[in-house]
Image 1 (cartoon, rainbow, N blue to C red):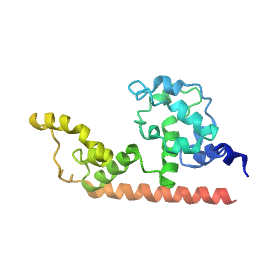
Image 2: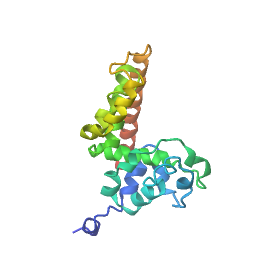
Image 3: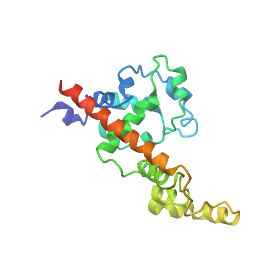
Length: 196
């Protein structure tokens, strides 16, 4: 039996993250905490800590990291990049971790549901459907938002349920297809490098 399996650790997890586009910074991280000290999300949510997420990935806590809702909270504001002594882009590492989670079908938490519907909505109309997004993200927990929705309704602040498509929606869809094609090409290139 593999000792990694016995402890629930995957000591090669960080290498898998490093193979994803822009995930290679994980191999250079000193775990100094500079990213956390400048993180705008951590300033409002004490549960989110980019240093801890990256450190757990390096330590091999694969399932804990991939199932964590915290990997979906990064706002990609890039505050962490400016001060990093190694020039690492922690947001890119978090994105690489998200990609591993998606590849493995880890879609059961609200963070990933939010991200998936956000993209779907943009591709449908060119805008985020703010009326439907909370329903998709929160599911049955949406009932906790009813008092706020009532207040918004009486103040005329509820977003439209069916937003109009923007004029450039075809361009957005073409851009998305280009990005998807580029990701497929990068994945193929990485597989070729891994096999040689």
